[in-house]
Image 1 (spheres, rainbow, N blue to C red):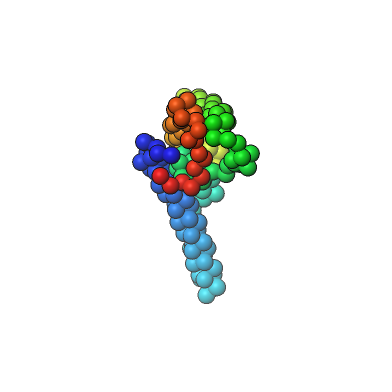
Image 2: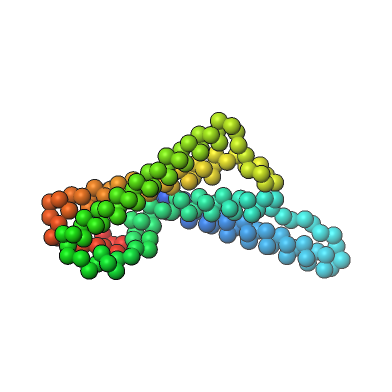
Length: 183
């Protein structure tokens, strides 16, 4: 399937990868800081105290960003788990309409989640909510990444839904399920 907004979905994937790289870098820095502290105490010195405060909290927020920002990228590259055991055995015409139904359910649920995340973000900004951890991070920061990711996912689902609808209505006998991720 050809996606016209693929560069936008790729941007979400790159931002998700950046979040994962930041998690890796922060955890590596924390580990190296602990090693330096152990070496310092091992040779008779004092602990230097190289630590990243709130690392678990920051890592959790980055993981949320990576999970949501990568949804659309994963979808357009056919990376989501799909159960095609039943739908793959159907003739082409009914298969198109079953696929359209599945995309409709996914789109409606994703739109509902996006609507809820919008109001959650709005409340967090209105009440200036912060995390309870050591750093007291404003909650609108990770919630913005969540909302951006679900909006990208809804766009990808809507694009796939429209393409499937056109195929189901105009030429249903040519419908195939493309799980390869290639164009």
